[in-house]
Image (cartoon, rainbow, N blue to C red; front, top):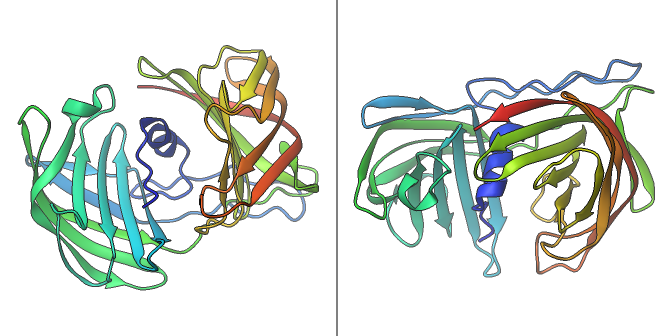
Length: 306
């Protein structure tokens, strides 16, 4: 099952998500003729952890058909830096699932500075799916979880409602795109934004991303140092989402140089540059790839300290 488990990607998802719960994430709107309004999605996920409510700021669900033709599912919810993660192999829809076995399981993360002591894996409990359609998944959960040193967290009154429909981002209006690239030779404009995460675990991690409907291009700089050249995928990672489907996600291979990002100008709240890279399909059973060329951007960014 293709789970999003790396701390790096978890951190990106907490700051650059396309869906939101409780707090709506509103993208910058294309302002020229033909620009679309930002997509606003309301979902919810919350639970009490040792009696204290944790209300997610971001949640999403991922569905995959595995090599055996069965459905795998992952549901995740985040309130920086806390996280709930549920996974299923051979998901069967509405029903009650054990939160602590090999087929279905739950975990709670308290933080990201020490994943061994701050991640709690369920030892007992249940996840109940009460509604499952093409548009949404709704359910409740409760479980007791322990970390590697035996500390216990009790999760109660958990509930979630999550959209399963692809959520398009905004499209740039005519002449208003602040990010563009050629994808397999086709020129695409994007509404671009960026975020700089500063913390002891990853250093200064800059994420630059642009949306055009369901299409998303993303570049993550592992240790941002301002102006200069960053090799993709040595110093940075490049990604492209075609349509938010199982087979529509592409990412550069870690440790394999396939392109570069050049930062030509950077200030305390803006960054400008160019990029190009090749990204294989994240479904490793497929040999398809995306070639990104002539990429350029001139965007503002926010800074988050963790």
